[in-house]
Image 1 (tube, rainbow, N blue to C red):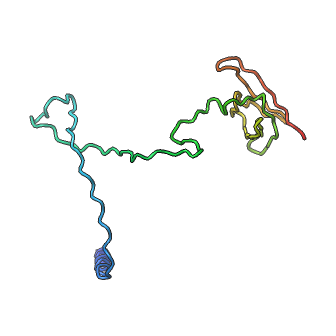
Image 2 (cartoon, rainbow, N blue to C red):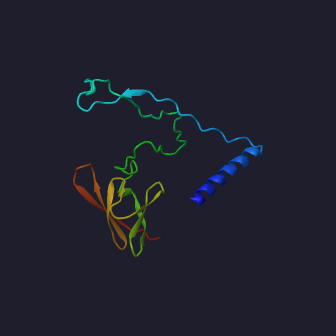
Image 3 (spheres, one colour):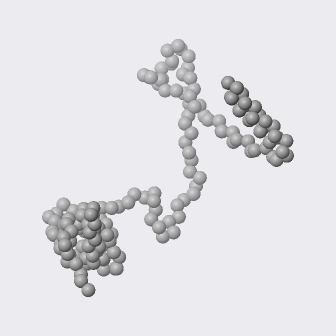
Length: 165
């Protein structure tokens, strides 16, 4: 009990010393805006009066945050508020027009390095999609893609062989 009283005494002393220091007092906390009251919903019939014959008590409505009118400026970047379209991969990219430039093996995984015609490289593991195909298998010096001409149609196998300079 003494310890709690000592802490209160120290806090009071600090407050008193702070008041004597001549520095301005800290800013007051903002006062919340009043909330509109709405009637509480009745359990069975909302239009029926409360069991005691009195009107239903008023309950504060939840505060709904309102937008401040700002808009996202993309500036050449992808808009993070728009859902990604990951179904088709890069638009217009076909597995048949790419080349296999490397295979990376480690104790845990094997990765394929594939380069598109425009010079953009992709690092893929089995199961990843690239354009119109899905990587099925990575061999010693080849990769195998399953490519469907149209969604729901028969898949073709496209094999890319490692390019050696």
